[in-house]
Length: 279
Image 1 (cartoon, rainbow, N blue to C red):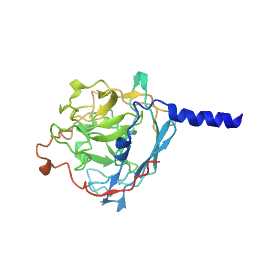
Image 2 (cartoon, rainbow, N blue to C red; image 1 turned 30 degrees about the horizontal axis):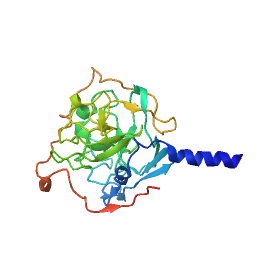
Image 3 (tube, helix red, strand yellow; image 1 turned 180 degrees about the horizontal axis):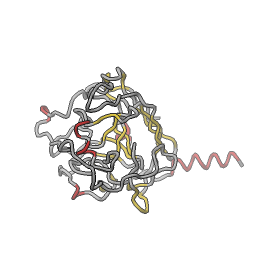
């Protein structure tokens, strides 16, 4: 009897509908480029492990691109950038939730280089793209008080933002849906008007979140179901932008697509790649 139960479970793993799963090509994009991060002198690592009906995401949270000075000496950003031990569990086949869910503080997704993606709010529920603009480095990331480097807005050093060319995947949300750049399949540069309340839409039958130039930048809510053992915070502190105590320190996200692929300021260090485990 036990043997029969095991056999049933194994078969079930293969018959699950894969229509909305991350494709093999999308999973293969989760790679840390060869880059020794200057604050830690460490190389980033990231992996995705397939486990029946879930995907296990792991990373050390070290970015694979240029960063700011995050060694505790900077007046604008006194936080350190530290190695993390990240593990998140997402559905292998994401499903729409009956109702969209607000985004908690902390990780809501993982970028293709293993860096955390955060919601668009700062600790006061202000627009982080405006209030934390002077805290961000050249690639628009920074560490929190626990040393976890993360993105609130477009991780502009992770993708080729070529005009009229469909954007590549830049990460995955904790509900299992992929996150893509701002250029749609038909070459349209997307804005909030093209997207739903969660900052996504369906493309070729697959739901995707998209990075855009305006709030909420990456995600506005969870469109899909989040697993109870996902490994993220569950309570939502911010559901809308606060109307008080939100003094902008900059102009927020303002990236432009590149007309000339050979002269694009957002593309560098694309030739060398290093280890990923997709078992």
